[in-house]
Length: 229
Image 1: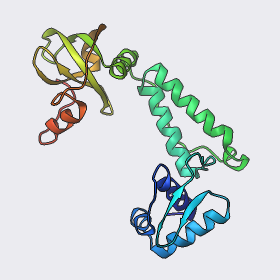
Image 2 (image 1 turned 90 degrees about the vertical axis):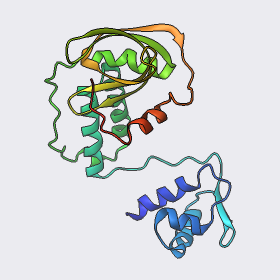
Image 3 (image 1 turned 90 degrees about the horizontal axis):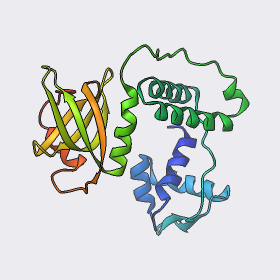
């Protein structure tokens, strides 16, 4: 790990905590306590408001904010590739948010990074997947809003479901919605390209034991979960 990255992680480890010992920091950062003492001393000398002392513990001033952390070329390539994937396979709103995030990164990059040659990684937008349908589903998940789905199963059977949307999953070639189905009284998952209509309802739902996204993960943890059915 680069020392700059380690110092950044050290500061983040102190953020929001009352007091952290050097032993705890050494364990989290996978370094020796001696290295922690040296790093803390150097950070304090550079003006980072860390309070405390060896043998007692350290804490960071509550309102301290880190300056922007620079990315190396490989990290920038990964971020740009991720944004391109979101732009291609996410809905238009998500794609715009990814573009906005990259613009903010580019605004604080040093000239040398801005002039660096771009990695030759491309995400062609050649699919006809209904990505626009992700927008109302994302909004319903965030608002805990019940939705009604007109759905076509793989065998062609049509059904109408009233569900509690919990999460969206991207499988590389398709998206699925994980939800609690009121009619089946169990977790179900739906391929987005098989949803014929999606109607947000006025009703909202509250998390209940056995029906949360965490419960969903536990329910599928011991068996194969196919992407849509």
